[in-house]
Length: 391
Image (cartoon, rainbow, N blue to C red; front, side):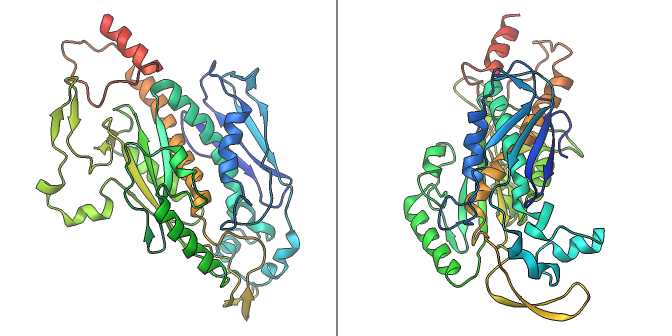
């Protein structure tokens, strides 16, 4: 399970009857359709191109509870996706030999038993529940503040996406090619790289970058529940994730304080802003209203079609060639997964922020100058700020 005010619990296994999620804490009276959830699941599903796993799953969402006539009830929302195309026979050798760098041996060491077929809970199929829940979180964030969360493949191996404008990159830009890189020239080279690797029975990793725009200032807490700390935990809980950074990240360590600091300025509306955004939209563990920019590193897929040295469950030296249908590169399908985890964290922190900081009135005379850009017109946040200003 994950989250505090906006909570999810995923369930099910890769080769079981189905997988799904229970989402609790969703505000009542929000319009939500099955199609909005399905749209995100379609971006995650297998079999969508030659550079991902060929497993052919429709991943059709069934809303079991919490939504009536396309309106949320405020009660837990249950969503089920049935497994249709699992081939457990592809995993017969895995019952004996551990797949190198996979979760097999570690699961066995912890539990003394494991689900061999499909990897059970260690399979990326578990992320269906996260993406479905993330679709709900995205809807809440968009309704409240016009938040836009856009992820894309920033790098495959040593091939990086060039000239990505984080202020303007759109879902349409990302979905224009099968690798989900918003630069066509870079995408072509990335696809060629994945094709080259997959034809040798190997796999390759890289980096997903996400930008969240129109996030209100004030989300997060100063110490243990810093916004970037919760984002890091969320993103690092995804299968195959190996690194996380926000804003300037590790590159920022090459700068001096004078070079790295985001100086404060006033915008045309007289609001406090930063001239640069090396902080990645988060300062002191709290959002400052600027774009939140983060990156997640993903390792190459563990299960590959090349013969490798390993050991058996009973401790005998062995060799193993991975079978089954696996992604030669997880990045294209990881994009909606990372977006979902970002949305879940932001929705959780939004509800906690409103619960804590909107109860007692703030005297306008003692209030600080507003931080971050004006609220997006037509949102709940904009209406609320207009009402508060009138009072």
